[in-house]
Image (cartoon, rainbow, N blue to C red):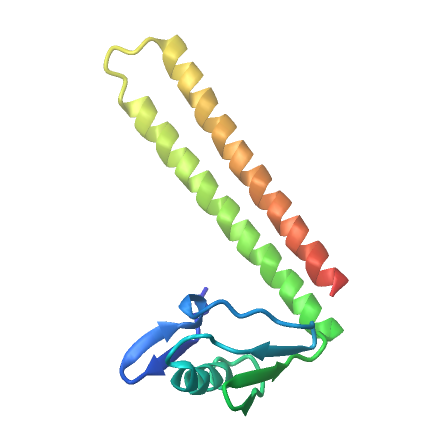
Length: 153
């Protein structure tokens, strides 16, 4: 699966991910005004506008001085369904990674039996299983929470 890359702003040759730009707080859920508070505000505004337009999000920001307004349309039923499927797919991939890591750890521990009693081996294998189960339960809980957020939108 191809990972989505963070939109990148270019300020005279300096790549700056939007995740690292100054904090931006939306005033409402439908229209997100973005106003960076830094000395490079005008250059950053232009870079933010460019990054949002070219991020493949189907958003059309409007620039007003050092303010960028991003109208965000309400998600359609199809969009919500696609996002729910994506969350489920990502959660399942994460659980599969945990299971592979668990299996690798168990295999390595079983092979490294250099004078370790079987009781200790059994206890450690049980602990590995417990940690893996906790991780998969946490992934499931987070995925369910995200699905509820998407359905509520």
